[in-house]
Length: 467
Image (tube, rainbow, N blue to C red):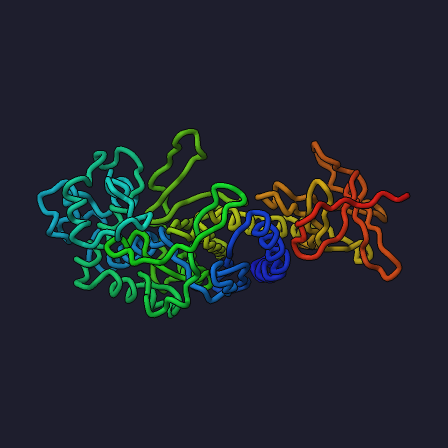
C-alpha cells in the first residue's frame, strides 16, 4: 500500500483528472454549478468550481461562493451536543424537559437526547404542513416549533424505527440553547466555528453576505425545461436541522476535525460515539443505510466513511470523511436535482483507481503515453494517468470505476486490460498521430474516436471513413 506521504502526493496529482471528470459529468447532466474541495489529513489539496452561481445573472461559480448545506447542519448540532457532554453541561441520557421546560410533562419532554441524535425518537419529520420547504410560508419560529412538538410530534414510540426528523433536530437546537443559556447560533459558533478558525461557515443565512451565496435553482422535470432561481430564506427554529451555510473549502476543514487524532473540537472517544452505528435499516428494497449520531455511515470506493448530505431548496450537497485515513471530500451543487452524491462518490472512485494502480506498480512507458478527451458516436471518454496507469473514463457513466477502461502494456503496444468482460478486453489500443505528433484518432478495441476540446458534445462525432 502507498505510504501516507505518497498517498498525499498521489491525491494532489489527481487535480486535472478529477476536474475533467466533473466537467464532463456536469455538462452531461446539465448542472448549473458545482464546487469541490478535497482535504487529506487536514491539508486542502484540491479546490475547484464549475459553471454558474446564478443562471439569471450569468455570474460564474467560484470556490468562494457560499452554499446552504442543509442537513449537514445535523452534524454541527450533534458535534455541539457531544462537546457539551464532554464539558458536563448535559448528558446524552438527559431527557428533553431538563433543558426545554416548555415541553415538561409532554411525550416530547420525556425523549432522550441520544434518541433524538440517532433519529430513534419517533418524531414527525417536517410537521403535518411542511410547505415551508417550498417557500409557501416561512420556516417555523421557536413558538411554532414548540406547538408542533406539543400537538403532533409523536409518530412512533422511541426506538421503534429509525425515523429521520428535521423537527427532532430543531428540538435539539432548543436543548443546546437550554444547556448553554445562549442562542443556537452563539453556542455553535463558540463550540465549533471559532476553535477551527473558519470564516466561511455558519449556522444560519446571513443577509449581509447575500452577494456571497450561490443562487439555488429549480430541478428539471424534462431535459429542455429551463431552471429558475430560488431565493434564500432564514430557517429560523430549524437552523439546527438545516440552516448552516459553507463553501466546500471550509466544509472539508470542518470534516477534518472528525478524523481521529485531531482533537481541536472533539476527543477521539466522542468521535467513536458519534461514528458508531446506531441504526441499520433498509426501506422499500433500497440499499441498506446506516446512521450514527448526526452522521450517516457508508462504504464508498472501498472506504468506511462518515458524513452527511444536504437538501435545501435549490442546493444539494454531500460530504464524506474517512476518519482513519484522513481523506475528506465535499461536493456542493446549486440545483434542486444536483448530483452532489454521485459526484462525491465519483471523486472517491477516481482516488481508489489511482491508489490501486500505484500499488500495482506497473507503469506505462513514456513512449506509449497519451491523454485527452475523445468522442465517437457511441460515447465520449477521457484518458488519464491515474497512479502511473492509463485509464479511459466515460464522460457519461456516473461511476468512474464502473465506466473505466484500464489500459495495459503488452510488449511494445497498449491493450485493454485482460479481464472477463462484455467489452473488448485484451484488444489493442491504437493511437494515430499526424506529422507534428498530434493525436488524430484513438481506437479502443473495435471503434475509433476523435479528439475534442472541452465538452464539445453539441453535434454527433462521426469519424470519417477513409475513401
